[in-house]
Image (tube, rainbow, N blue to C red; front, side, top):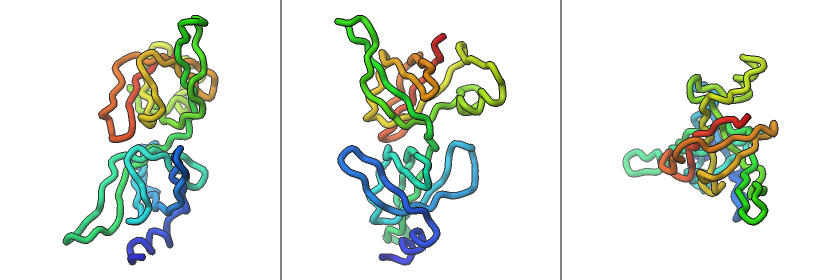
Length: 187
């Protein structure tokens, strides 16, 4: 183990990379500095197996990994650097079933980040700031793993049982392994 990997293990948190093919155990140093309250900088050891678009569980919080780069100096690989989105929202994806003419649950427990496009506040924070706010006319962005399968025809239900409708083009190029989905709350 390199000195940098050992340092990340010593000051970092035990973390789990959550994958359908099997979870991986690693360590991550997640910076306490806040640029945007839903985004963090992180460092990972060289043997972590981390990849863009991974879902990471560390200290009870879920994060989406984006902008992963290898930190190399003079041809030597020291560590991975990444941006993390805090994603403690869980949503359910529903798809329209033409035979029953109703939306049916397709995927549950999709970890994601949902922010207000205008103020960059999360839905739950906005509700605290503006009691009674329904957000029907406001646009939000949902960030999730590409493998979640969200399409233009998906109906998304958040953990507060609010229905979210995809309201624009899904951006599959936002970050490798992640999608950016414009959504509106249905009334």
